[in-house]
Length: 354
Ligand code: NAD
Image (cartoon, rainbow, N blue to C red):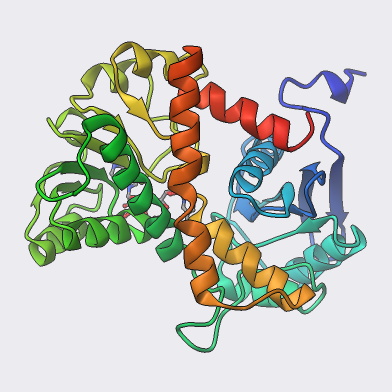
């Protein structure tokens, strides 16, 4: 038997729970990386993996990422992530979601879930019928805490871009600062709107070209084909679509001073942080700048369960602190000569007692 403990992505995770419910056909993995700061919180991904090992790898990596993200956002939450291994047809039934809810409930609050790729708000409502350890549930009024995390993620990225521009370009205003945005979905579209309001010059792109063009029209921005965006000469490149875009080829094409955007896992490999630094490009570590959504979702949970203040302004206040953390990272990076992604990892590890 090969030992699970020697899996490259196993990082002393506290719980790796393999779930199988024969009646509904549910197969899932719930990974809790750390509960040092609180319950392991992170979304559920519903995905078809050609090889179930890839599902395990995702659960291990993503749950560790959540430990880092939650710690750096100053939340009293640890890191966890669940993966439901879908069949080829992505069959999803109410019985499967109910069985999944019971599996979460069985962990007694060590894992708290929310939406991720392939899981909707309605799915979360179904899971919530079986367990109270769920967040990201629909809200009734627009100023209720919770709901779609996209706009909150966008808000944090907007603050982060402002901080990066002040740090690197010594400009206090975004007026005329050129930002190239990859992906104009929930997050990228929100970032574009906020930047446009502050007078930034925008170039947008999306593989859905009509989507990018429509938003560009609305905001008076330019748009380019999706394969051209990484080579646009600009001040800030803001990736808000796919992960792993910062690879050898992608970094070589960049013509910007700053990379700051919401996509998860932007660096293809660990050494790509050093490649950005070698090109004198300031990098905002993804899990620090994109924490606005988890801040909203976590505060929704804390207020529902523990009666913490349910004040949307408190959520906004916390999101506005993202730049403080980024500034700490950049200053430490300059002091130590270590890249910003490594500095962030080290800070996060310290916060979770590793
Ligand atoms: P979304 O599905 O709403 O939008 C993604 C957009 O990217 C779509 O319009 C899609 O057409 C486009 N796209 C896909 N591939 C592309 C490519 N190669 N080039 C250009 N555009 C491309 O998703 P979202 O919620 O906006 O999330 C965007 C990214 O941010 C993802 O990496 C996600 O993991 C990350 N993220 C999202 C949140 C959140 O709160 N939604 C929080 C943290 C991180």
